[in-house]
Amino acid sequence: MPLCVQCPRRCGADRSASAGFCSSPEEFLVARIGLHPWEEPILSGERGAGTVFFSGCNLRCVYCQNRAISRGGIGTPMSADALAEAILGLRDAGAACIDLVTPTHYTDQLIPVLRAVKPSLGIPIVWNCGGYESVASLRSLEGLIDVYLPDCKYFDGDLASALSAAPDYFPVFCDALSEMLRQVGSPTFSAKGSLASGVIVRHLVLPSHRADSIALLRALADRFGVSRFLLSLMNQYTPDFAATAPDPALHRRLTTFEYDSVLSVAASLGFRGFSQSRAAASADFTPDFENRTETDETVCP
Image (cartoon, rainbow, N blue to C red; front, side, top):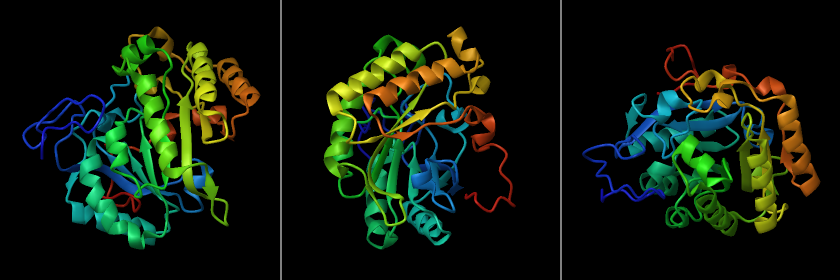
């Protein structure tokens, strides 16, 4: 494998010899494969989304709820053939879609896998990412991805730097979103009402940072309009995973006022999509990557 430049960091690591910024080797390192009922309803369907959680990440979010796998270490090595077989197994188990979670740093390796399964899959493939994507890498996925599901985490560069080590986050996100929209267009739906193609932009409102959320929504509306993608405004921030975060505000939960004020702006701008109840702010909705059991039938490997 050539020196890795798959994501905007372009760290140039030789991942066949050592992990890159993403803490990932060249081969697939997979933390969990199974049906996951807690994605947006138009993705989860009746049985759940068929999720593949990849270990590693090209961001360094200090409040990451998946830190057990995002910093590398936890996961099972998988060959391309084994991964393709597992994806088809999720389809056979009734998955509403194939949900590739944090796949960015495996873009090049995933292309032959997706080409192999796509013709016979019969359900959408979802690229569920942190929003910090290379346009060149996204272009290599054209025709293979049906639904893009990026986070849009921050508007302010200083905040993005402090919380995710990505000072250029918002401009990079906007370039990536432009490419995603070029590829899959506006949302389309199946006869059952599930999302067949399109983009859902997720945004997690953070404690004490509602002003950044509001600025982000206004900037997205100004640049892209409000009808080309769906917005999923998340209320699920939990401080359980932010014990060492340098920002004291992140050590508490989001207030109802903070979330509702951002939700109100999203509605006034005309965004369509999804909101969450306060009950979503619980660590109970995060898969347990460290304490898997052989009796957990939805977990593989």
